[in-house]
Amino acid sequence: MDPHLIELPRKVVVGNDVLKEIPSVCREFGISSGILVISDDNTRGIAGDSIKDSLDSVMAIVNSDQYSEVERLKAEHSGINMVIGAGGGRVIDIGKLLAFELDIPFISVPTAPSHDGITSERVSISKGNGKYSIRAKPPIAIIADIKILMNAPYRLVAAGCADVISNYTAVYDWKLGKERGEYYSKYAATLSLLAAEIVMRSAESIKNMEERGIRDLVEALVTSGISMSMAHSSRPASGSEHMFSHALDQLGSTALHGEQCGIGAVLMAHLQRQDWENIKKSLAVVGAPTTARELGVDQDMLVNALVKAKEIRDRYTILNRKPLDAQKAIELCRATGIFS
Image 1 (cartoon, rainbow, N blue to C red):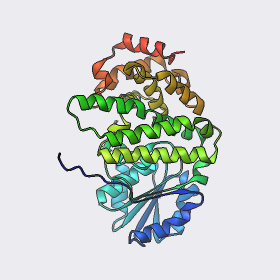
Image 2: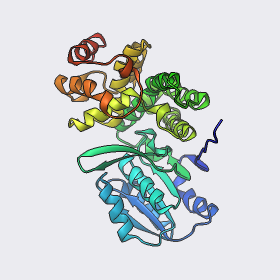
Image 3: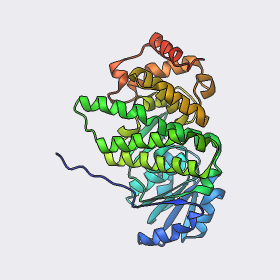
Image 4: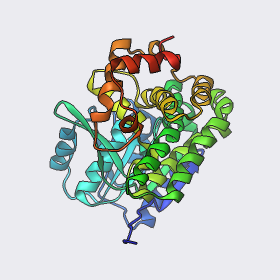
């Protein structure tokens, strides 16, 4: 068997008031100066400023997920030794890619439990008119402050749940790829499914914003990200449901990534002959969209995304086994109640 490189975070700190641990974590990695803290206008006051003030560091504000932001930061901040991203998906992805291109460590400080990118080596970045998922490096550390995460807008919490729950259909698709000779890690797949199961079992607790439920969600997001780093691929947590989400993005949807993946998981699970009804029920419990109307996407756009999804990337999924045309897509949406 060929050698397989696995890069994982070296430190994960989850708890209340853990931002104060960041200086000691940096020193543990031998870095005490030349640190760039990035946030956006919203998350600066939530976490960015306090992190900056506790370190020998400078602050940068990002307000776009365009690759041009990475280029700007490289030009404006030379000689930095570490990047800390305090924010949501956009901030963390920009910071992760910046650190990767500069070959320096990155620390992930999520302010909302909205997706598994807080841990994974994957980055979703816009370039020109398209959005791309590319490989970078996983963060060297993750600092997840439960108090901050419990104050995130609930819609982001529900989206994070939906993103993890969609691992069910991603792993199924990965097994289809395995049948065609693609690399498959049973261990990584098991971790990914475990993360989905934890969120589904904790759905009521998460909905009620109980601390234990939010901890379960954060730990599931971390586990999902680690499964991708172990596989050296997004396969454990990204299949046909994510291709559907990316197709919606290209067609102009403004729904959240996790929300789209949740709807995609219901649809793809039906095609895969999995228990799509249980997936849909869990999404409803956590308050994630379960219909096109709740997603804020019109029926024509959703059908077009289903037809287009197979073309998003060269990845074998259920959409290769059961390709959809417009009529089949409509029937699928009706069968799952997505058009109700």
